[in-house]
Image (cartoon, rainbow, N blue to C red):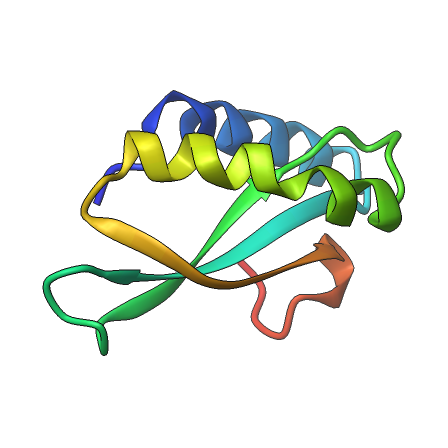
Length: 91
């Protein structure tokens, strides 16, 4: 699966934030393929570090809609906003 331009940009931003030891906000989407609803994975989009989790939650739908347009073989089944230090598994 390709994440598109936004995912590439997010990776760059994540790398910069990680190097600086910053705790960054992420939109975390669980996505599943249309061909096999049991094939799912988490996708993370790094967001502006100056927004709150409430702003993330309120503004997530347009970001997810754009991701779905760029990845038409997948659908979002659930999502949340969290800070990078809340990850269960580290990248």
